[in-house]
Length: 164
Image (cartoon, rainbow, N blue to C red; front, side, top):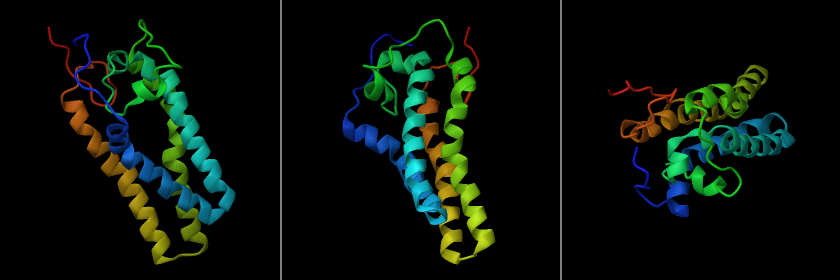
């Protein structure tokens, strides 16, 4: 990796790169709110908290974070609070701490299945399918473009062979 940022992120870039995750959280809040309206607020609050915790526990170990080249803009959103941490590996910290994100991804489908079992509707089924497509296919698929040119060798999402 070079030691200079390869591009500058602005608010629009950050919003664009995080749009699918925002859509996922909005759809998840709608699904959660159909079961119990306060659950939508709790879901959104947890989603925000989980992203902040991810920035604190995982991002400082990423080479992109310290270079200021994070495609998600997390280095801009959290740089004042969480400093880069050399010494640990991104892969290890990711595996240890990614569980903080799990409820944001899996609570809405669980709620959706519960709602379908207690009162089926085509609209609800469509909402659940859209959430799942965004969260489990489109969002991961869209991140591949960042992985292709990434030099982070120890990334658990898409490991690369170490070049000698």
